[in-house]
Image (cartoon, rainbow, N blue to C red):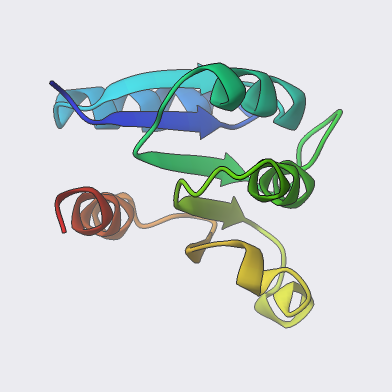
Length: 118
């Protein structure tokens, strides 16, 4: 059974690229556009990894991740952001790892693979 990734990204091009690359590497992917949808899908389905943008409309990635954890979800969450690393100190512990945009796609999926396959 393929490993599953939930991607939450409000920027269509970035979401499509991440989804396409994940699928090309054999992952089963569901992609959503905001934190509200991330929570809804994560509450009803199992994922091996969540990749979320930090800054999204309706509900940001950090808040969605915090709510997931409060609900008992232990899925590793990777954040993608354009926010300066100096501004991330208050939310750094919510995520397994934070990648700065523009994201090095090879590095991102090597890390995803290391999380999923051990």
